[in-house]
Image (cartoon, rainbow, N blue to C red; front, side):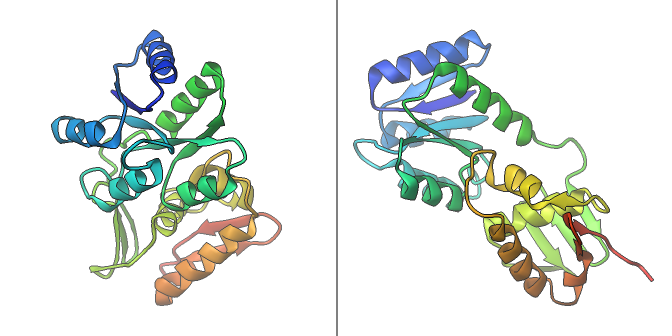
Amino acid sequence: MIYCVEDDVNIREIEIYTLQSMGFDVTGFADGKAFFTALDEKLPDLVLLDVMLPDLDGIQILKMLRQRSRTKDIPVIMATARGAEFEKIQALDLGADDYLAKPFSMMEMAARVKAVLRRTKKPGNDSLITLGPLTIDKLGHQASLGGTPLELTLKEYELLSLLCKNSGRAFSREQILDVVWGTNYDGETRTVDVHIKTLRQKLQDMGKIIKTVRGVGYKAEFDQT
């Protein structure tokens, strides 16, 4: 199920038609109030969310989704006005999985929806990742060290999960940006370095599992000796 939150009826109808033609169940909403009422009944697999809405704007809605345990993991694609750089950055920082700059083609929208759904596909039974005293509970969206929960931002958590899930594999900064920040994030790769630094600090002695691979990027590796 995909929820489209868009107040322009013409845009909303063509979004719904396009996604339905791809085989998705789709429901459209003209405002945040109707959207949240539907969330109480059923959670979608993805939300296509416009920024400019008549009651709550898309940024407020995204923030509310990420603050609630029941909805914090729902993939969200934001639709922003072309050139609205601040809105785009704000949405990504708050945990949006991708964005579309208006006006966008339905082919582009369809491609982004499929890409985000592939990237955010829920795991089967591998809900726990463990490296020594570090545990990542993917279902609970929580990392803990020696049983003590770590206070991580959304991007810190996703970065740590990516590295630990693929322990031993080196990722370039560009690859990390694509997976954690989304394929359209056009910020600097230094963003990755800053988040790696804060992650190492929060992991304390376990920060050494995040290793710098010279000329490549970073990897997670736990040395049991």
